[in-house]
Length: 412
Image (cartoon, rainbow, N blue to C red; front, side, top):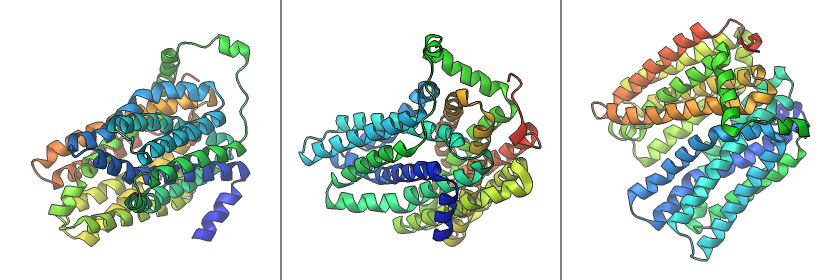
């Protein structure tokens, strides 16, 4: 699989290789941050509210900056934005590492750095997704998104967290230095990407206020049946995702009788399902089209959650979670590829941002509902999550045309 994966990346062209390697480097840094940042917070305070608040701050920052970042992704050279976002967050985290090594690190400083990292991650992610249609042929978008998704899974789920934990055990500053270096490398690697034509002075003169330009993207999204429908499905799917995952660690301990190691194992196994999905999505869409692939993936996700809510066997739970993550990756690649195909280049950053805001709100709602439902029964939020995905599949059958890749906006 490794040789085929490398050949698949190479066959998509040199610009894509640059974007893919840059993305992989940044995702590895994200995986290291996932474990090392909370560990650093826990070393600075024993107040669980302050430790948990780090993740809350990160989520709120991403929500608040999503729309204005979408405007800037459409205003300036996306390549330059991707380079700057990665270089700056690399330098900021290296500065944090230095302060920790000099025993000058504080919790407020960590919060500030996390807020900066969240902002720049939003910029880098949107710029990268918006760049891809100009890097590979339209017919190769599914393959390209699949390769990027596979690299993200390997970095975020398999390599990054254990590497971050190992380095933190050596020295608190060590994973910070690695994260900063990886993000800086991602910025430098993006220098190999093609440069987009910059706006003319006349276009810059006719710019509207940021908020109004952001609303243009939201209006386009609301006016396009296919892309708007995908955004609504994505918001509901985010609710369905967080319903079980907000309480999965408790379900694993109490219903599956798993210790910390066992819980980590089933999560690692579930990520394997995502890898399978990342390689198979292009084949699915070429065989049966986007609409049927999306509906089938959402039904598969629903079935996996219904079955998971009934099981008490850890091995079966790992298999079901792998099937669930497979569905999530297939759905995600299809939705991303369709947005890249259908959204005009000049609006791509803003439409991506508006879709992202809906997904982030869905994640927050799903997390809150999962906790409330779990008070009654731990399997309940998992089963309700399955019901949400049934609703997503029905909505997809209603709003998606038989050939979504060739749909057009009513408003042009």
